[in-house]
Length: 252
Image (cartoon, rainbow, N blue to C red; front, side, top):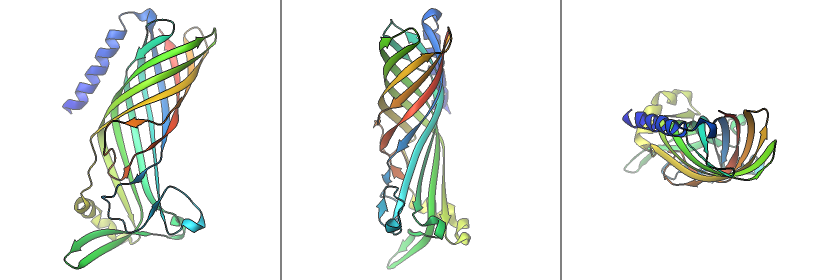
């Protein structure tokens, strides 16, 4: 809780700093998504090869991994001059990942080792494993706008984000529904943990359209991110394929 309060206080302080010159301040309300190309965290004792999200009949003996990040936030932006600006703010993110059998709709399953003692090894039949994590964080942005027209501009951004995980939920879908009662025990015995801190740096490029004297609409393409922190998910290793962001900017 102390870490969360620190993040919020820091964000408020940054906003107050920007607000000293309201003529150069704008407020952005935004949301976006990033598509991931995950690989299996090898700490999970899954007895099957893992592929990357293909859905053909020839891959029915495989397990697919999926992942995405959805986020929204608010960010004050301070205009340094015609071409340069900086911003910060508060961002909420939700990270979803899953391991699902290709022939899930036809009752397919894979195996998860749930116990191992001496020469005995027990496996459970698993249809899917899903994990969701919620984060609160602060992005720091530097924006360069090389082309500024009356109703339109083009820009590029460098963004660094530091986020703290609020909660995580992992759900195992067993082939045998009676095994559901043992989910907590299975997760505890596997003991895979994730880093509570999540940090990335990324580049993006976009365009902004003037809707009125004070309101602008922006659309950005986000390039694949570089992950500063490791072990960001207990289920998969994260590799980012890029994404998009939409925002409404209000000039104060």
